[in-house]
Length: 221
Ligand code: CA
Image (tube, rainbow, N blue to C red; front, side, top):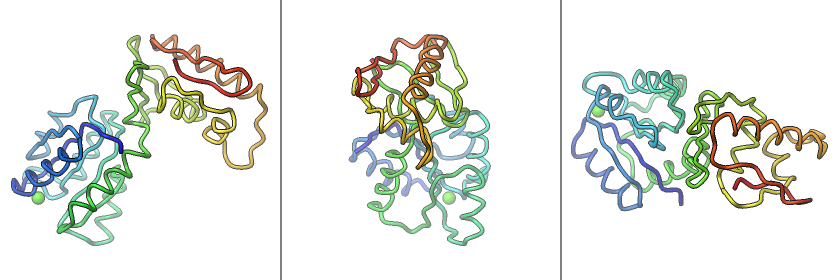
């Protein structure tokens, strides 16, 4: 399973403690906040997911999510709420939330949903040894040299490479990641994209580069 630094924002202290303990038992690192102001003050670049109560004492969790997104935070946000209505669900998604869980809920469901969000979130891919991060909110690669904008295709190509630094990602899998089903993508088109990505990695001051595995694919090393 994917482990992450998770921020839990909940004003009900017993629920906050129960959730935090359960996530720690799953191997996640947990930071907690009791309200919206605390959550925004706690935001750190390594936070890989946020569990965010909608009914906070000082604010609406949806506004907090909105503020996080406006600051460029791209990792998944899972809302908790006592309200189960469709309207709240929709406004939650509109505010930039990724999933939604109505109270009362089973901890096992919260953990399963968080796991699903983390598995499909390129935001949490900090590449470890690769030394770069991908920001899905702005389609940028961020390295020690700064932030460099990527095109959507470049972003989709880099995500699977960054998910497994050092592992060869096959050309077929890169084509699937980068382009819609059925698109005809010639080998030299893929190579041209890799050339552009290499240049952008250099611009971002990345300590890693894209290495060709002849005839097979590419890897981030
Ligand atoms: Ca609450």
